[in-house]
Length: 104
Image (tube, rainbow, N blue to C red):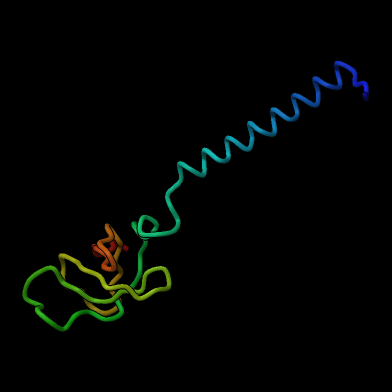
């Protein structure tokens, strides 16, 4: 069997422990971050209205299509939508995004 000195073993053990603490810290940070995929990842994204609905424009919810994250989505809003209005996703219901007009 190979012999290793006590100080050498301590150094290797400390380096290994430091490596695993670093990896565990990064894993926990990744778990706490906002999701970037799926329905949860769409909440908070902003995009322009591409096709406002021409139907029942007298009462909410107002519908249309908006370009969110490079994809065309059906959207619903409590306010009337016009083409190129900026909207922010507040919720996801199936394949329909619930949006509000963006302040920007």
